Length: 114
Image (cartoon, rainbow, N blue to C red; front, side):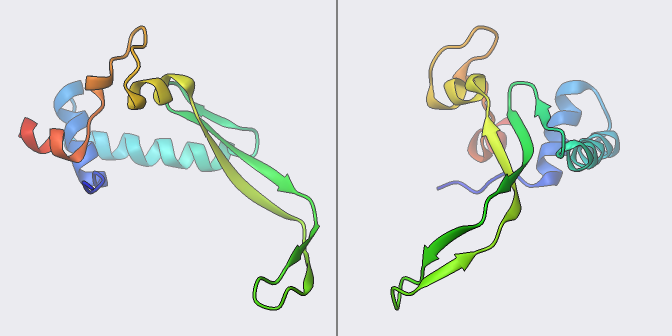
């Protein structure tokens, strides 16, 4: 399995394809991440990628798998990410209007570009 792209590689790719400097591309990535963290309580959508949101889980009864003993699992807040249908279709190879599966950049295709 190929390794995922690093932040530096993503910034370099964006800089080349958008006509930006690498420093500007890194700043955009940092600002996008900061905005997502701040807005996740309301739900943060990245068009074509997915939606990040905060969810509350109720308290429940679980089992210790080693002993079978019932244990109480407390309520907690979790972060959920739902992948957009467009992203699923593009990654799984279905043709999507405006997006094509071969447009998805992977580590191996990034290496062949350079």
